[in-house]
Amino acid sequence: MSGAAHDFGFEHVPETDQSFENALAKARAGERLTVDDGVELITTGTDREGIDPERKELVLEAADRRRAEVVGNDVTFVANLNNNVTTACNTGCLFCNFKNTAHLFEADSDADHGGFTKTPAESRDIVADAVEMGIYEVTSVSGLHPALVLDEEHREILEAYDNPAAEVNYKPPEAYDTDPASYAEQLSAMSAAGAHVHSMTPEEAHHAKRGTDWSYEEVYRRLADAGLASAPGTAAEILVPEVREVICPGKIGTDEWVAGIEGAMEADLDVTATIMYGHVETEKHRVLHLDVIRDLQDRYGGITEFVPLSFIHQNTPLYDRGLVTGGASDDEDELMVAVARLYLDNVDHIQSSWVKFGNAKALKLLNCGADDLMGTILSEEITKRAGGGFGEFRSFDDYVDMITAIGRRPVERSTDYRTRRPIDPDDGPHGPTLGPRADGTPLLDGRRDPATADD
Ligand code: SF4
Image (cartoon, rainbow, N blue to C red):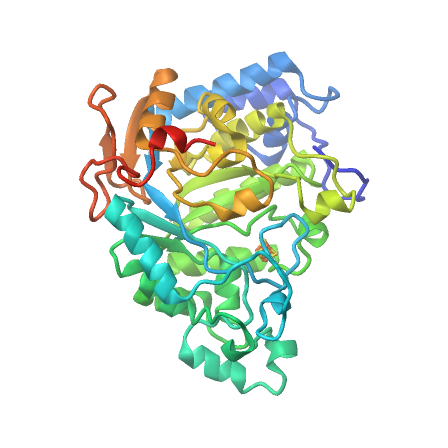
């Protein structure tokens, strides 16, 4: 456990009948790893206390070699914008400081909550503006606002409950300062300008079907009709029930998350997968999580990338209540990425998140098995509000400088990785070309000096 301040009495602890040497030999040979193999690699051997630096280097080397075999030397990134609709949420996950309790947003509340809710018109304007600047993708992940519904049919169903607030976490838009409208209206507004809309985690899809007997597939099909193009596999955290009971008891369970992602793929949407690690979980939980993802990919094949998200502990209830003393160490971050690369033999792309790690570590992780450096992120509320100190935007020139500095080739990509444009480092200044209005002009040209946009 990285920063756990308690013994949570977990059933799953890192003990195996495997040896580190055998597990490493299997990884090097490209054999499919078992959970025990993964535990040996991610702990650098359960026969030793703590991380063994020499063994760690062997694991990182094996992962880096596998990365080169699978995807070569390209480092990809996407021109994107974050446009989250609302921070209103009653779920109360203990690792989250993104949300604000929803009643603070009610029309008769005079609390200064510091959060926000956007109308579809506001979302449309924000995305249209960014599309004009050249972005390809908008990512949108929001709190579970009680007034948010899938569409008007869904609203009618929820309003027919005797006590919708208590039974199905629904309150009418009139109860709030700002009406977020429906998911369908928000997605339609964001897709209107031509951006690829990457939104609706399984948790949000669950909110979009609450109080009905609709399947996830049906919900995702309706969302796709409204403009959704792909779904982020966030809200996964750690897909092991005993961990979720500690960090997010109000959230959907592991089976429900898996059903949600399956529904998205059944609706022909690409999805991503994530892990949020470095809090109360053990190394065994991390590998069990990888096993869930690998199994999903075996059955459906629609996971485009895996994104390890290192827990940022500052300003979270988990930390404030003393349940954790910090997040993952650098060694743990490196091993998480490396073992993800080795374990997920059916997922091509492993992402290194500069928002979570900062530039230097994000680059280091590209030598531990990762091959994608996420996106430009013109706005990023979630990490900023949880205390991440790594700025909000990376220009194409920043990307080209960082990626060429480690001897790799920068490649602009689409969300699904199917469209890729290698970038000539000598042909600057660099800007996006894959978005509907992108013509190679640097993203913030004329708005703001990219040289001052860092951190
Ligand atoms: S992680 Fe999501 S569901 Fe949980 S409290 Fe935060 S915004 Fe709400």
